[in-house]
Amino acid sequence: MSSRRHFSSGFTLIELLLVIAIIAVLASITIIAINPARQLAQSNNAQRRSNVNTILNAISQYTIDEFGVIPSSISTTAVQVCRTNAASTSSCTDLSVLTADELYISSIPEDPTVASGNNTGYTVRKTTSSNPRVIVNSPAAELGETISVTR
Image 1: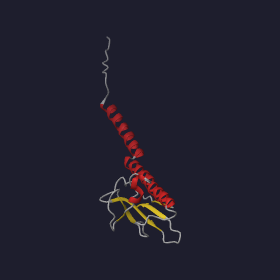
Image 2 (image 1 turned 90 degrees about the horizontal axis):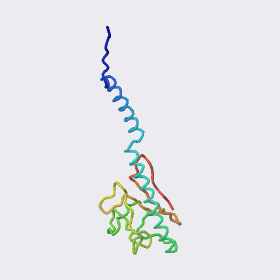
Image 3 (image 1 turned 90 degrees about the vertical axis):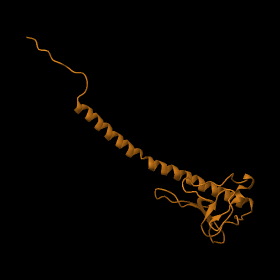
Image 4 (image 1 turned 45 degrees about the vertical axis):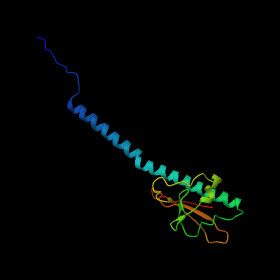
């Protein structure tokens, strides 16, 4: 008597569930490792560092061309920087001398997430010493970082 065995092609339910569970674990590990929110925050902070340096470089060039005179709109109190072509108010510092004829900078950079109204999201001030230094700051830096440049 011959016995016939039936072999079915396909996967059992247990095998399918095991593969799905392995894929889910690998996917969650990948998402945690990549962490898109952290990547975006790091990208925003890199943009902020670049913008702070751009503003400070433009102020430095202006100061050099004006024989050491810092733009008169910069006070000793940290005040938001006005957007390009925005009128100076008590809540923002007008740096249009830097953008006039695009001599030092074509436009004032804006924070990637918090710029609103006339404000760019960056602050500027000068020290009170006899040889004042200019400080440009990004108060909205993410991930607990401090982004501030002094020259």
